[in-house]
Image (cartoon, rainbow, N blue to C red; front, side, top):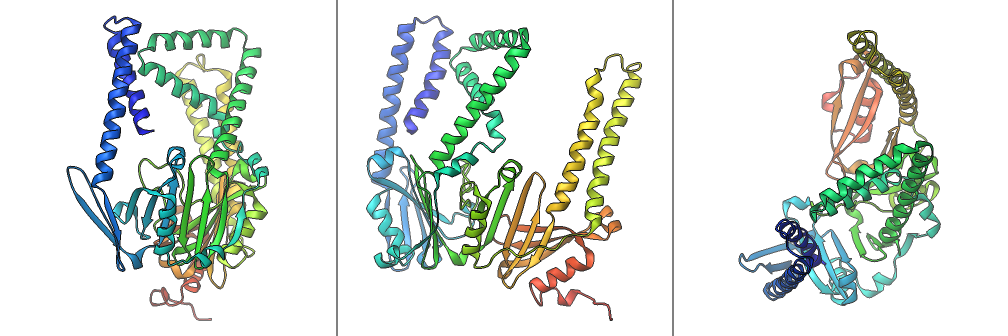
Length: 478
């Protein structure tokens, strides 16, 4: 697979170079074919040398890896620090019964706390996973499912902004690909002709283009859902959670529950309107672990009905979400004032530009709709954002909710809170509000309770982690 990507890039550059020198088509094809053979041979030779130079071993104390062709590396991690084992197999590896194993210690990947064994046989990978996590065959069989894929959930896949921009992304990618092959003139001419066709009959072409864009987006979202979440299963093993998913590229992540510091329920606007949500783990050492990895490795579920997501969250945390306390009315007023000020400033700018332009001779009438639209959006955002605010304290968790466009509800284990940050802007101080941020080594690193009353926020932090704030608080005598 890697060699094919290199061949595509090299062929594009070679086509552009040779086409500029008036090579015949047959000569260009022959040159590209020869380059492809050389590249594939070089990649295969490199992989053979890499595999011959790679050795690993598992001792009673450590997992060790020696690798490198020209520069030798020797890395090892203590077995008692292993917190997760991630198994992944793309279609080519699956064809040959191979799996890539990534072993993590629960620390940040940039600290070098992860070893990758690439590849192992599927049998050896599973045996290594069980050994590192101290599991026997009987423990492997004793796990209980928390959630399994229902293909009816694929209806939630199109509820994303990418559905409405899918065709534009495809066209942009195709344009760059053709341009890299030296076809800039062709793509430019195609774009000009397409724009002329679009503007010739806008009443027909615009709805048609929008419909095609939506269709491409829906199909793309459904295919992406199927590939990412096909064969999905989340189960509990003794002391661990195991997540398995992937239709073409199989993925398996085993996560120690002692690393888990809570869960986050995400409800983007479109999903929320569809009655759906998705679940992420709050755990140490999980996140976007490398520049070439775009997947959210903390994701525990695909988009699913909100009731199901709440049930899974309850099963993981051991407690349901409580009723949340509302925030002071000043929190809503702050947001409404912000929306009004933003719309007023935009109106002022438009009036000033119109005055400089001699009573708006160069401005279209639609421009005056901009502040109206901004005001409408701002008022909605203020009301929805204020309605989303809420917090609660349970025996084990600090629960906080916020967000208008993307509403997030976080249940954070109180034992994982390492400290507090209190923030008061000038306007918050005048309104008697502050933002309480719980600092933790897991997930995003900090989780906020926005615009809570000053006294209520300090009391919440003091009760969440008893004794941590007491030396710094002065309580009024009754």
